[in-house]
Image (cartoon, rainbow, N blue to C red; front, top):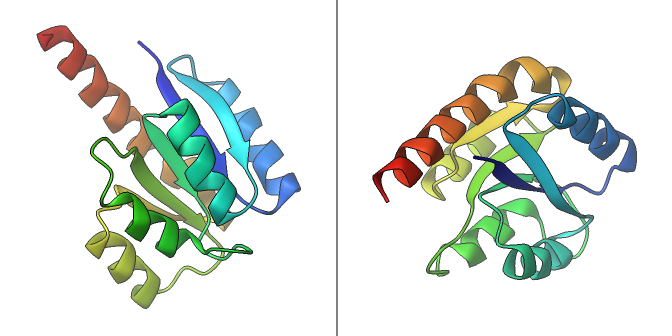
Length: 130
């Protein structure tokens, strides 16, 4: 069972690094990438990922506003923020918006892996019950 992921970041180099990391994990599949907040909402509606890895600071609509918008969706993806703007205020807002995690870009491999493993386990348990 795969965890389908939408990557959202305006930094192409960072997206490539995250994609390379995720490609090494057998239980994840990157379904699409978006480079700004508006595109993220469109791709999330189109691809219906299980998880959105979302940057905070982006053009057109920031990641926090994307998460806020998706709160009204009946089946919104889980969100983990990946950001260079790692501070208490952003972490608190992310938690209030229901994010499953907030990981600094500087150590995304170490911070992201346990969160993804937990989501894969949850998805497998849910699908086993169905």
